Every structure is written in structure tokens, then in C-alpha cells.
Length: 140
Image (tube, rainbow, N blue to C red; front, top):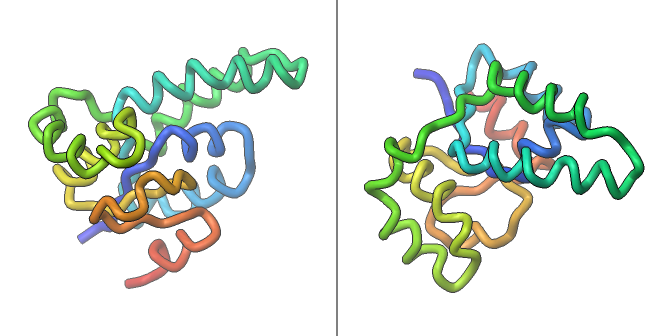
């Protein structure tokens, strides 16, 4: 049985702008399934031009890389995780309610979350950060 992880938007952005996340996605694509709610891809698409614009860079190449990331990370439509919205919102209520799709998808798939966002900590779902994720990915 293959492992899986649900990625939030900040991990998608790191996959585009950095080296480490993309390297891990490519290294473990044969042994792990990577998923992200469709809204996380939309959020990354919205923030990348702002981030790169602040650096005086063109966002076009980054948006292309984001589109190519769907080869490694499956974008999951809201219809598949919508039924867990109420539960996910309850778990995220004291934190950031906008993150409910990540929690809902993790609940539907019964998978941990890969994130750098501390709002997920304490949600009752296992979370992994980039500096520790390879422990999960390497375990048999």
C-alpha cells in the first residue's frame, strides 16, 4: 500500500520557488501519493505573482511550474471533500477557518498533512513539516 500526504498551499508555493520540496516530491513520487485541495492550487496561483512581483520578477515561469506540479501533486476537486466541511471547520475554528479544505481532504483520505502552517497543529490530524517529512517518506 502506497503512502500519501495532503499538501497545503504553502508547500505548493515552496515546490515552485524552492528546491527542497520539489526534490522530495520527485524523489518519492513512486512510493507516495501527493494530494492537495483544488483551492490550494488557486491560492498558490493568486500569491505567486504577489511574491515574485515584490522581488521584481515575472510570475509567468513560476505559474508554469505550478501547472507542471500537478504531475506530482493531484489537485482534488471540492466535491470529493465537501462532505467533511463541517467537521473540518470545527477542528479549525480556533485557528484559520480558510484552511478547512486541507483538513477535510486529510480526513476523507485518512492521511497526514505536509505544511509549515502551525494552524494545523492541534487539529487532530498528523502534520509533518519539510524539515521532518523525509522521516515519514522513508518509513516502510
